[in-house]
Length: 299
Image 1 (cartoon, helix red, strand yellow):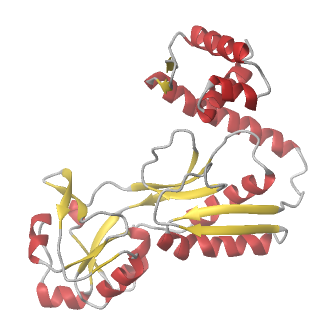
Image 2 (image 1 turned 90 degrees about the vertical axis):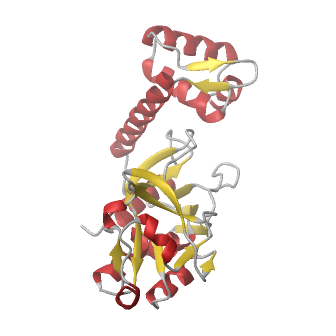
Image 3 (image 1 turned 90 degrees about the horizontal axis):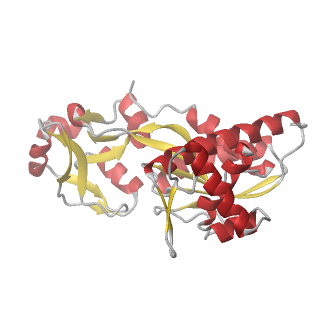
């Protein structure tokens, strides 16, 4: 059995959603797909997929093996590309998506530097406070914050962020600092409603909880909410990348630092781990290095 080909077949089945679609993508046949998958499962001694007439579902072993296959195939792909002439200039259009505020603060500046370094490239940036379907919406690369639900995407880590509760020094001087998440009920809390949440994520007695908050100002965009917090209107909860420079400059004070929820990952994601076009491969390498060099924590 050709193990590398079997891995490619397995990944293609997951990414295309069926054995038939994977066969078309690999210019193969359905019997070959079925036989290769059966041989792979027999070789590994585990079931990778639960198959019915309507759908395929990864087993726990299949999910772990899928991640390993993607890493191995990406490494092989990278090794082959490094043997080629890497001085060839990347060119063409790439479509990128990110959340609105993170995109404005970090992705757009990185793209501007990328286009200066790669003048034959073009970039279309879509800033959306929703999770876009990359394949359905014709998007090449996404930058996402938080856990990833779509197992068909390839994810490469950039960094970590954490939700921080902050207030201006003036607000703290006038109203004091909350001593526990329960005390937030007594404070004017500025709410960012763009993510659909009306609660703040904190640890309550050591367990992650959604803490209800209320206040006299809410906004569906992060920047006005942050500006209201800077102006001393109330407490706010923001991701660390949004406020870390304000904290370092003394314009905001971190609160409830012993009650912070676990940090969340930032990933650059794209649909396939196979033979990436040069324009996407070069951009992914650039954005990981450029954005990853930015410190999002207070350490």
